[in-house]
Length: 555
Ligand code: F6P
Image (cartoon, rainbow, N blue to C red; front, side, top):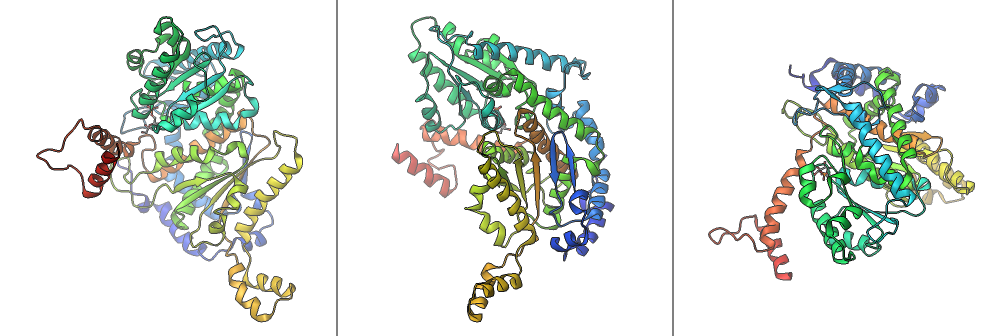
């Protein structure tokens, strides 16, 4: 059955009318009118706390948004996802990253296959392998323990593991140094190889498809580098000590020359950007150990349970999604800034870029019709206080409204308490400043108090005025631990899911990256001189032809 267009739904139209009333709302007034606003517009779940009171909305807005979510079938689609139905309709696949973090014994049979048993069989292998490497029992080809691990992957096979390893650096094994190579730019591989020793390095080739051009080129380069330096013994036995693969593609791994015994599999129902919970998280398990990796999965599972069972009005991922939807549709927010007030989350905005923008950066519905409202905003950000001294100027006084997600841990993982107090003070002060702003009268009073002349006051006042009324969410956790990090990532996964259902896009394909890949192959052949222009005619537009010509002249 065709899904009605978003703008034709009763609940969307009710929201449109409501948005007209809300147009003049000032958050300052909303706070003044309701002393319970913070209690009313905040919620908790899976070790996380979400304050969404600093948004331009009220209780009625939330009711209408929840009605919209129901009318769009969010609950039914959520249940279909958890049950393993093929909700990825353009690739005819189930979407089961939630199954990767379900405890052993959870019953999930999909197409006659015991998914839970499959998942835990791979987890058992990950435990055995990571225990051996971490304890020093797994030795390189000259008998030395592993000291360096190089994860070769890109997109979801890089961003998740890299972000999590950084975020959990306090839990990491002291002997193991982690490296991540993703870019086909040789400088990336060069930087990693210049730091490692072939006798003590383990390479993980992480690729769901095992066909991704960048990863394949990087893996071949690492293999050649290793073989050129490996001490005399059979290549296969040396490689077997230093190369493992994480993939769904057994045949391609064999062709590459990796021992199938060194392959950690996963399944087509795990999307690349949802794969850190699968064997793609091998580098995480190596860094922090299987125990903490299990805690990471358990934290995500807690959020899954919250998402699966909490009513939409108290459901943290649903609320985050609905508030984001409101800001996108009715406040015309073109982008969302992610501001982790935690240095160890410094790759989190980059991780969310793929999660959100690859999932919901779509312009047609699941049925292939053009969408009738804007969809995913651009996602970007940097750790909090650094952003304050760079682009926050625009967020405070620029012409666009950019909602911000502040993320902080109440307790640090270090003992410099005064740093942490200053950090939290900055985080809370920013959300207050975005909400309240500073009126021209307040600015005038300040300047007069400083003894400035009336003329100077009038000259400076407009520059020092802050419009305020700018929306933000604040997400707090007690500490950044494997479990709260798991819950945080799952929170955003489900937020992305809910928004995708409301927009009626397929959040689980990514056809938009294909065209560039195809054209790059063609141009690479032209740069190498392997393919020649037909009938003497250059095959691109004048810009692309010109760029190719300049590059060829420089070779
Ligand atoms: O090209 C996009 C993409 O397919 C992402 O969705 C994926 O995470 C990334 O490439 C890497 O893919 P693979 O793990 O198959 O190498």
